[in-house]
Each structure stands twice: as C-alpha cells, then as structure tokens.
Image 1: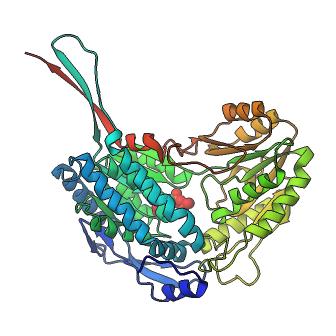
Image 2: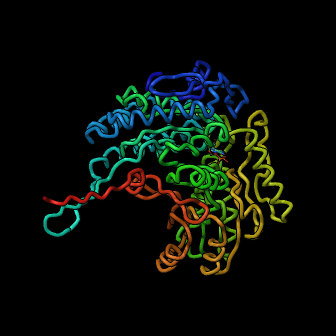
Image 3: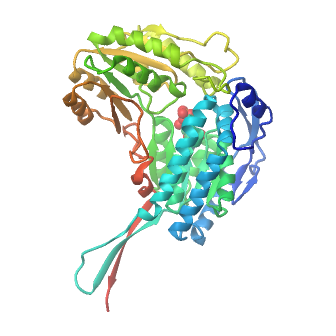
Amino acid sequence: MSASAPQTAAGWHARAAAFAPAGDLFIDGDFCPAASGDRFETVNPATGAVLAAVARGGPADVDRAVASGRAAFRGGAWSRCQPRQRMAVLGRFADLIERHAAEFALTDTLDMGKPVTEMMVVDVPLAVLCLRFTAECIDKMQGSVGMTGQDVLSYVLRQPLGVVGCIVPWNYPLLMTIWKIAPALAAGNSVVLKPAEQSPLSALLLARLFMEAGGPAGVLNVVTGFGPEAGMPLALHGDVEKIAFTGSAEIGKLMLVYAGQSNMKKVATECGGKSPHVVMADAPDLEKAAEWAAMGIFGNQGEVCCAGSRLIVERAVADEFTALLKEKALRNHVPGDPLDPATTMGPLVDRGQQKRVLSYIAAGLEGGAACALGGGVPAGLEAGAYVSPTIFTGVDNSMRIAREEIFGPVVSVLTVDSLDEAIAVANDSPFGLAAGIWTGDLGKAHRFARDVEAGMVYVNSYMNGDMQMPFGGWKESGNGRDKCMDSLLSYTQTKGVWVTFE
Ligand code: ADP
C-alpha cells in the first residue's frame, strides 16, 4: 500500500475493500500457520464483517517462538551487536512504520473500530516517536565502576534479559505493542508478542517490517491467539525472562501467579484504572476543563487505560460544568463510520464489550444514578458495536459505576465540597493510574499532585505527556512503567563483576 493516506471516506472504503492482511503466526523470521492448523475470525466491529481468519496459536507455537527467540538471543546477532547497529535497525523500523502509516491506520481501524483519523494523528505518530526515542536511548545506557580498593576493579554491567513475552490489549493495538516491544528490543532482548485476539493484525505487519528493517530472524516473533491458549503458556514458560503486560487487573494478577508458578520471571503490569479528574470551582477556564474532560473519557470510545472516568466536581460549579460537558460530548464525540476522516468516535471493539458497557449503564441506573446524556446505542448505528457517550450524575463513589473499570464511553460525575474531600474520593479506589485537577490555585494543584495516589497527574490538562514521562500506575493499576528511560532500563538487568589484580 502506498504511503499517502486517502482524504475521504470513499477513499478509505476503497482501501478497505482490497484489505488482505497477513493472518499467520510469525516465528523465526517467517509466517506460518498454527501447529494445530486452527484459525479464528477477527471481525470489523463497525459492520460485523469478518476481516480475516487468523492462526490460533497454542502451547506448541509458543514453545517454538520462545525457542527461536532464545536461539537468536544466545547467537548474539541482536543481543550483543554494537548499539549503533541496533539503533540503525530500530530507526529504519520507525521509518517503515511511518511510511506504512495508512496501512496501519486502516488495519487497526478495521480491526478494533477507532476512527481512522485518530490512527493517523495519534496512534501512528506516537508509535513512531516511541520507537525513535527508545532507539536514541540505546547508547545512553551505562553501567558503572565501583570505588573499590587497590588491586581490585569492580564494575556493573547492564545486560538484556533474554526472551521477553509481551502480552498486549486491543485498545491501541499498534501503540501499546510498540510501548512494549520498542524498549524490549532496544535493550537487546528477543520478543515473543501475543497481541489481543480482538486486534491481532497490525502486530503481524509490524513483524514483517522489523525484518525489512534488518532485524534478525527470531528476535521478534508473534503468536496470535487467545489469552488462555497462547498468553498463558507464554507467561508460564520457563525460558521467558520477563512478561510485559497491559490489560485488565484480573489478568494482570494472573501474570504474577504464572511467574510464581514457573521461573519467577520479572512481571511488569499496566492494568487500567478508574482515574479521578477533579474540577475545582476556581478552575481558570471551565469550558476548557469540560472539553478536556470529555476528551478524557470519550476519546478512543472511552477504551483508554487512563480515561478520566470519575469526574469529581466542586459543588458550586457542578451544574454549569455538567452542562458544558454535555455540550462538548455532543459536539466533539459523535459516533459514526470510523473510516470517514470526519468521524470522532467509532464503535467499541466488539459486541462483547458493547454488552459489557451497556450492562454497566444498567447498573448505574439501578444504583440510582441519573443518566444525563446517552445511555444506549446511537440510532442508525445498530449494525455496529456502538455505545453513545454517556454521562451519569448524582453518582456516589460506592456505586459500581464509580468503582469498576468500564472501558467504554461512560463517565460518572461526583460532587464534593472541598479539595480535601476531592482527594479523599479520588484515593478511595483500588486503582491509581492517572489523576487530573483543574484549579487556578497553585497550592491546591501541588497539594493534589502530592497527595493523590496515582502514577500520573495532570494539572489544567488531561492525558498530556511526552516520551520522557513515565506511564504507569500505583495500586492495582500495576507496577510497570512504559515510555521513558526507566522503561528501557526495566528490560535490562545488572551484573556486578569483581576483578582482583594478581
Ligand atoms: P481486556 O479485558 O481489556 O480484554 P484482558 O486482560 O482480558 O483485557 O486481555 C489483555 C491481554 O491478555 C490480551 O492479549 C489477552 O489475550 C491476554 N490474556 C487474557 N487472558 C489471559 C491469560 N489467562 N493468560 C495470559 N494472557 C491472557
């Protein structure tokens, strides 16, 4: 596919009509079917149409992929090559992703439903940026030399781990994958990637481009398939040194169990949240706050780990803010055909997720919350897995819709009377991924940033950031950190070497 992206819905639909993705596993530098020969269908959630029959990987495939990764690692062509060589390959990999931007955009849009424009302006550029940043960090990592006594030299080497298993979700198929594989590969590891069963296709395109960029065979393997069939054997594998996981807290906890049941591999988890987004009465610009709040929960259909799903608003401005929030939702987040470049909101990833989100809406109503906007499937879009932007007011923090991660376009508005109360409500959650506050008072902003239990805090914006900032959570939102230099270091281990002169 050419690099230029269509500018119209008709143009994207023409590309979609010719869409013929790879659907095999990628092991040891080649596409191959699953050992069992089994396949599963991946479906376009906007229409229900089957996109591809994808190889259904199982334990035998995982074994082969891990063996290939281990052989490549021990061979040293990647794990021990000159840093500049690895940087060059990852640089070319980034260039290729950029050149194939339209193909990635089409692939993830068809596979999981997000608007194609979002792919073009968010997912693809951020994936390229992550890869470039991480590649640039490779020769900035250093070991150290100890201040030991005479006739002794002690030094600390920083070395890759071995085979890393990356188990990723479906909400940002390309971007979440790059957040894991970029640092894993940059540090010199081999990777076995298990994409989500709902969105397996862009991972296969990535594997092909990695080879085209000059990556050695066996260094990046992809085993498509279901969690218990392909993900579990990977996480239990004795020759896998680390699992890098993003997904639900329920499965994140299992990763820790699997590590304990096998080889005590390192486990890095990012498990979503129920992030508090606070609006104080002294917010400098309530309209801007409402715009970001709407983006923070309705962007990407609300299928965002750090979505600001609990809006904690000071009572004095609650009515005004809720009215503005409705207005922004209606204007900026309109469900439609994700292949239309003008569309701002697509369907959810599949019918199962739609059902789950609708059941939370029912739970909100049963719990006594008031539905101020949305609350169902948008008219005319019944053929897809759509849910309208939904706002609940009158929510108490003990309600299910305020405690559990919905992972859809549903926000709870809670009212409070002070900053202290806002912080108490914010922290009354098992999760701790992101938090935001809108205030014109510097003291309040810093106090909130200090006291809120979250891995990321935004003051007077939301979900901002750049590659230098760590992305990860506290509490049940997980223990890993993506992006940033720390992420790269987390795919290495140290080795102390003690040399006695004699
Ligand atoms: P979600 O609820 O967002 O779909 P999950 O946590 O179920 O998230 O899935 C995230 C990733 O974990 C996916 O790639 C999925 O296939 C994988 N997965 C699910 N269950 C397991 C499991 N038991 N073992 C290993 N991986 C799993």
